[in-house]
Image (cartoon, helix red, strand yellow):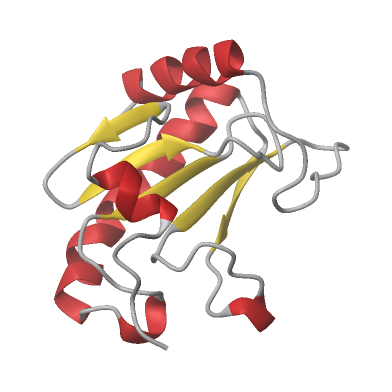
Length: 138
């Protein structure tokens, strides 16, 4: 399968669709997941076009991973989570629903079950506040 330059994340990266932006630099856009599995669920989306990890440029991955780590630390600090789950899916049978490489940083809270992947839509005001709080820790 080939990369679709009109996928939803590519559209967001082009500025043609809004998002709750946490942070942006030359390598990636960090935004809130609008269908979070827990409070503070954040996405790191590289600007380099690739369908997923399987076809990503290793140099782009190398530049991206320090940011993934920084965002994970910021998510944990901003949400007071007990831990952070890193998830990344490759192809539909593995659970990938948007075919642009992205990393999920999902705060985990002791004794609180995670919601379903792509479950209910979050409140926009809450997402905006979380984006600001997480961004302040990056």
